[in-house]
Image 1 (cartoon, rainbow, N blue to C red):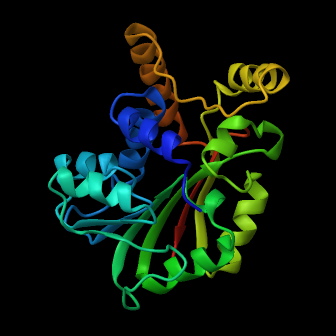
Image 2 (image 1 turned 180 degrees about the horizontal axis):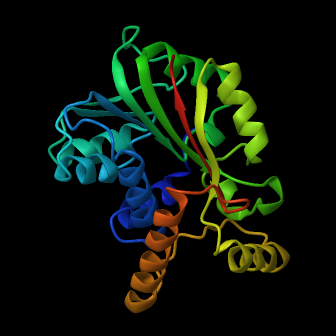
Length: 243
């Protein structure tokens, strides 16, 4: 299910600068620390291609992406990305055992048949391939932001673990993400739900200094999460392997 047009436009504009996206790219890079730079990598739900561009700058030389949105793919191609295409993540046109590394951020919560999507990603993954998966945590955090993003659900860690295992993946790391900011984000969303019945989102860019401070805080938390798993957080993060 695609994002609402205005939300998608805003999403593309903020991908490069907003602390949320910058911190997640940093976490992805940390999770890729043992991945060979020539590994065949796909970003499933690549949006405007900011993550692909980031990984290319970090030396990954064989990257590609898919997204359900034609506008997103148009954004990618305008940035010079050629290995991108508009595809449904539940039924791609890739052959079996194509990719070494699969990344999916902010995707499964938008897919009606999330289990089928995870099975499809398992199909196109090589043996010993890695899946890095991020999605939204806790249904009680549901807000107008989720509705604008056309999300269908939020997950507990155990719910997502179950789906990933059912699809044939072996979980290597399972954690919540964005732990320390859960209390303020929960409060803000609760208050917004009380006073605002109109369409809305949480994608406003904070003042530059605050944006930098939160990014630095999140990067510190990311370093911690390479060694431990968080017991709570705004998002769910799973690293799984295809045997």
